Amino acid sequence: MKRFTFALEVLLAIGGTLFLAGLQSCKHEPMYKIDPNIKSVTPTPVTDTNTKGTLDGKALYLQYCASCHGLIDTSTKRGATAIQIQTGIGNVNSMMTLSSLTIAQIQAIADALKTNPPSQDTTTNGALLYASYCASCHNPLSSSTKLGATASQIKTGIVNVTTMNPLSTLTTLQIQAIANALKTNVTPSDTNGAALYASFCASCHNPLPYSTKLGATASQIQTGIANVANMNSLSTLTSLQIQAIADALRTNVPPVDTSNGTSLYTYYCASCHNPLPTSAKLGATASNIQNAISTVGAMQSLSTLTTSQIQSIADVLASTPMPTDGASLYTINCEGCHRALPNSQVGGSSVSDIQSAISEVNKMKYLSKLTVAQIQAISGVLANINGGGD
Image (tube, rainbow, N blue to C red; front, side):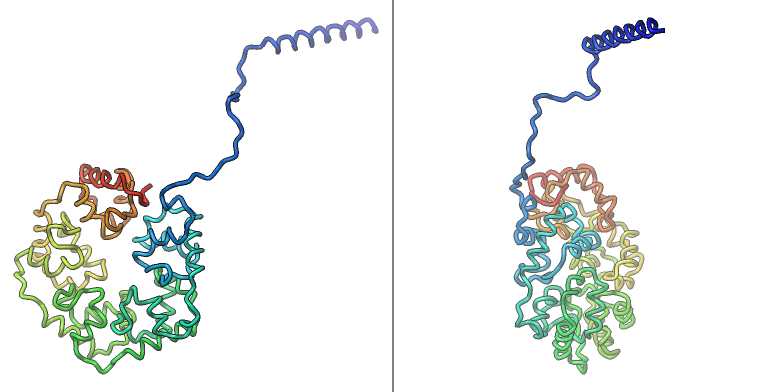
């Protein structure tokens, strides 16, 4: 038995030696190669000459926010948090191009806004608070489109209107002060339609002679006040005042050649969509126009146009040639939302970026009329612009 055990031990020793020798001579490559030339390094931040590569909140705000919300010292968004800014980018069409900003950059903007709180002397001064937080959207106090708005209506706006959410930093006393300032500027006994229109309507719908609402009836105005969010504050107008505005709109209706598409476009469309040669709606069909009249609040007063008039407008839009150079194409189709070309927020956008946006962003879907060549031309002029394009 001992001899058997000894023999077994000898065999195992010999086998182990052979196994080790085999491993040493094995020519198989390891499953994962390690490059001996790679050295361990500590990552360092990349310095980007583009403002978007920095964390200077004031500079970022100046480039991406000031054109709508005013300079940072008097910004209507002072006190806005990073979460509020992200919410705006996600939900406000005109801010969606800022989705390329990083979380750190958004926080930098929020920090800059936080370090610029309103000075204490404006705490309960309604006129000054209004000038700081409201005038940029609703006109100076004397001609505010929100004259008569109550504290309750202002609070409702802050909660329900996305672009007003950052004003949640205002205290109840400050909101009441703004409401008091708006109340002291109301003249409820005024039934001068032209004056009422100038105070309550012109900022959105152009001066009376060129109003986009010419011909609107009292009933249509009341419907707008009830259903269009940014018109709700006009619920303070009396029935007589609304009728006076409607009368002013009726007496200013131009003698339009109802069969001339160019004339119809000039009176009903040019104020919002540019003169016909550079219209942002070149190529729009009668169906497109009818759909917009039904679904876009600001266009509902055009429901007075007949089917033949709408077709006449569509015909001139179809027959007006679209320019072929990228700069002109950008001006007509993109500038309204993305700023003038030198400061475009979508600089660097590729053809696929633009095509994706046209497919996915509701506000841009009408641009499906653009050809591939036209999109390439737009992308070409954006190539050297430092903006928000991905």
